[in-house]
Image (cartoon, rainbow, N blue to C red; front, top):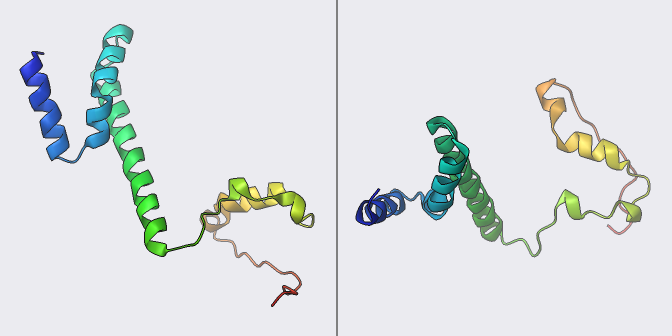
Length: 115
């Protein structure tokens, strides 16, 4: 592909708002050429990365829009401060398989003494 064609292609990707694909195109082309990647695998890699980047941007925008004072994740939760919690059970519940199985979830515990 000639340099002018490549630049036009990058411009079109950006106009279509496929910015992550545009960022990764050069590296993906080199990898595809060196590893004899199929056309489908090449496209799948680029589309998967674009999709992942869009999901991350969407979540980031929602967090900003929510005006939450801090971002808390399950990964950052200190289970040692709440020894009555079973970390394995919490992670299992976080997978939301109980929804797929159409099961109810009831969480019981003593009321928060600080409220």
